[in-house]
Each structure stands twice: as structure tokens, then as C-alpha cells.
Length: 369
Picture 1 (cartoon, helix red, strand yellow):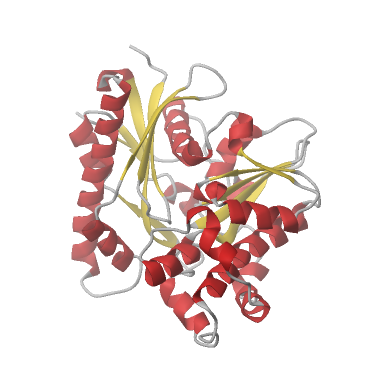
Picture 2: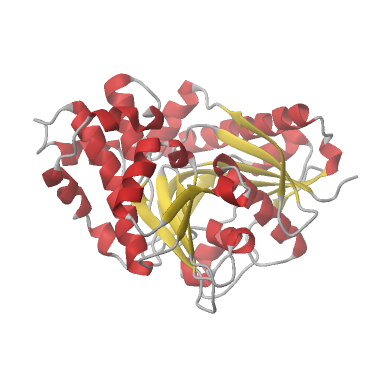
């Protein structure tokens, strides 16, 4: 039996599907053995979107969607193993991020809530599950996010080389790897794909703007762009993290009320620049020149990558594929890595990133037996 096999499960703020990866940790650098994406059925996706905002009968909906997502995550695992031709007995554990439905770390009693019942995943797959990675960090005074910088440091850091790992999912986050004795830093920069996705879904019933083509056809409105960039989140000091609770379709509609004279494509272009400028402003405050490696769905938005390069002329901007890791699967691999860290009794957070009072072993174990 290969005791080095772990599975990572991830569904991010974009809610564009459940990513499942089979990973081998035989060496320092993890090896991606197989990957699979499981679509979220439209009725379930609709209820997830509702659950991300305050509403009536939340507890009943939360309980039912938690179980439904657990079954969907388990389906992703079973389909992944079938695709890989690997028996469940070969897998040490599943690391499940779950689906964030509320992230409020800055309240007086902060919290971060992820669903996709790990007991259901364990029962449906017959594999032990490590889950609930964020709440230990929150209990120690941290944001509980982002958690991927510890993984980025492990696999992407290089001596004497400044690197920024940029993950563009629904929300964008960065990890700064200074390449020397300085502490690794990281935080959420703000919206990634979430507002662009919301706008094209509303206007064209498309899940996302393929390669940024619609945004490219428009012209950015500078007045609207500066209005969006004036949001207080961008003046906060790290550690900081955000999500759909702040940047969502309802917020977008409110912002657009003063700009309803704009063409739809111009709004899409402005939203893309909003993502690019908020990222560029933050990374330039860290260092004016570095290597940038992009992962997440935004890595495939060619217009986004082009505009980001224009804002950061002294940066080398490529995807994590240049470092040997497919940009689509980096986060899934990270949660397989966190499950492995749990099993080895090793910490998974970086206090300099999250603001926690100390390092900690993250997650809890849910056995299949």
C-alpha cells in the first residue's frame, strides 16, 4: 500500500465546482497523480449563493446543504479514484477545505464557517477525512485565511529570489516569498473573479468571461474604477482576508447605481481592471520587482494577465506551470498537504500571515470507521 497518497478537496469562493486531486508525497515536492472536477448542480449552487447572505430559515438550509455538499465532495473523491484506477485503501486521508459560506474573522467574536460534512465524506468514501482547517487559527486570534502561503513557502520558495504567488479565485490572495530571512507574508488583496463572474452571469448567463474576451471588448471607466478602489478594505493593513460577505452581487449592484449609463462591456472591463489594480497596488507596496507566478482560474484569463503585466512592468508574470504545478490544482494540492501535515503532527499556518498568536496543527480527524 502507498502510504504517501492523500486527496485534496477544494471548492472556493467562485463556487465553480469541487476540485479533487490525488497527490503523492514521496519527495519534498508533491506529485499530482490525478485530478477531477465535480460540477455543483444548479439547485444546490443556488442555495449556496443564498446561504452566503443573511436570510430566513438559515439553520435548516445550512444543515441540509452541509450534508448535500458532503455527498458531492464524496462523489468527487469516488470519481477521482475510479479515474486514477487507485483503490481507496491506498489513500491515507482526504484533506477537505469544504465550502466557505461565511467568513467574518474581524467581528468581536470572529469566525469562519466551511460546510461539506466531513462525516458524510468519510462514510461515503471509506477514507479518513481531515477537515475544519481554519477555525483553530481563528481560535488563536488569526484570520483563518489565507492558509495556502505555508504551502507556497514549502514548494515555491527559492533562496535569494523574490517571488509572489498570486492565487486568483473568486477572491485574490498573494504570498510574498522574499527569498531571504524576512518573514513570508500573504493576504487577500480583494476581488478576483467573483464580480466579473457575477456580472457576466447576470448579463449573458455565462459562467465566466472566457479568456477575458468580453472585458477586452469594452473600455474601462476611470471614474467607476477609482470609486471601486476607494473601498475601505484596500486601506486595511495585513493580516486581512475577505470573501463574498463583502464583495458580492448585491454590493456590485449598489456600486453600479451611479454608473448605469455605462455600456455592459465597459462595466466588465472596469471590473477586470478593479481586480488588476487592487492586486498591483498591494504587490508594489511589498516590492517593485519580483517573479510572479499565478494560479487559480484567473491564470486562464488572458486579458487579466496582459493588463496585470502592464501595471507591473518590472515583474516577470507567468503561471505556476513554470514551477511544475498546474495552476488549476494548486489549492487542492495545498489541502492534501495540510492533511499530510496534520497526520505528521506538524503546523499548517503562518502566524505572520494570518495574525494567529502561534503556529498550530490545523484541522480535525473524522474517521471512516
